[in-house]
Image (cartoon, rainbow, N blue to C red):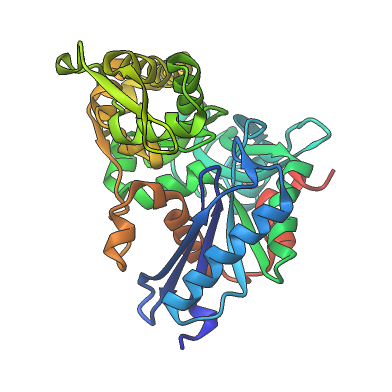
Length: 405
């Protein structure tokens, strides 16, 4: 059995599945995946807990399976969170340099970061990440470390990811009810980007889209840092609902048709073809149009990508995505999804694979595991920080004034 102190666990309680991934950090500091467990998710809608009892049972099944594969007891997890209430915003902090010689000291750097984090969130919201971007000295942008430079005005941008406090507490309570500790809650979109992108891709500029069952998260990197994040309360389940309504079939049959015959684009060969839909007894009860199925799916996926494209265009970020688009989540498996993304964004798109860690190849190659693997990688980064501690202390250290309200 592995030393539990070197084991890191990522837990994603998704709309379609619950996934637990176990990683081990060796003496050289290298992260290696040693266990994966998953179960069908029954207590989650649009990325949020709606039935705690069912969610707890699904989490327990995934954790037990991961423990068995890793041959290690799971005691704590880095927990992924999402939902329509999660928002990202960038705030600029300003600090005048008061010293006579105008040299920027470490204290000035800390002061301007504190100023940037001190934002007025809605009273029911709390911050979970405060991600520092580049500094500006007297209006000169792109400064990585201003300490020791001369200037009269120091500024810094901080990207804050925040959401409803009580809605974050729901998955935490489910996990703690299973006698597991929550080390930290982590935005799923951030986790997915950590799993998929290399440092070079982050520097070039990249968009990660995690197309899940109930939500779609997206994260933009440029110049090596996170520039923008967003969440849509739309995912693969909504495609199934559209198909059930448009094809006039039960929801379960719509899901089966999506998986067996679905496509994000409308191939010419689908025209005029029909698909028999059988009853539970295996008797054909009707035929549905292949072309109609593809049109319904294409329109919904096109809408999702257009919403993201419009948001990034408004933020002025589309021209920075030189490494292209990386798609993960269960929706990444839909045939033609890359072609559709390339048409909407006018950029190269590819299937995201967790190539920044080693270990169980079957998990690394599956796009729906990206967020859970990224949670483990996030945990690895936290382990390397001095004074690692539990959820409350860590969040206070990271977020400072945001949580002290």
